Image 1 (cartoon, rainbow, N blue to C red):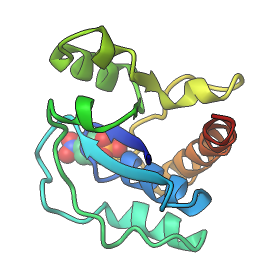
Image 2 (image 1 turned 180 degrees about the vertical axis):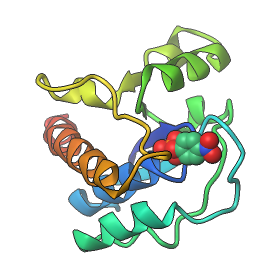
Image 3 (image 1 turned 30 degrees about the horizontal axis):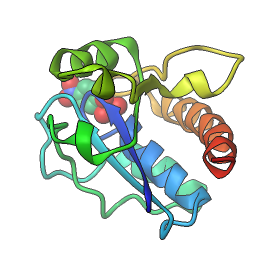
Length: 152
Ligand code: 4NP
């Protein structure tokens, strides 16, 4: 059976689309399903932020066909692992969780790595260098996550 991983941020246009694209680029997608969603619905149906598309393209990852969607309660049942980018996403998701089975699926993505910050900062209001930094953080976390998923 496929392992299903959901990446979550606030808008689903900057960080979690990158996380979806980066993780997909590292795994066999016939074995591991990867999706992303946002806790807010402001950008539903839109492609990722052009700055996220550009930094991903720089590393030969195409995220331009992704479309923004909002996190829904059913995602707790559909996915095995739900990775959030920051504490605010964590709290928003926990408010919708119905039981301990839901709650134990949710982790901060950067918990996958022992060093560095614990949150992927929101790059929306910053410059392009923020997107490069976010890419690097997510890339490192996904390297660790892939090793862990493959050990199962
Ligand atoms: P994301 O970034 O959560 O990484 O997708 C944001 C995108 C849009 C907004 C905030 C954060 N916004 O306020 O529209």
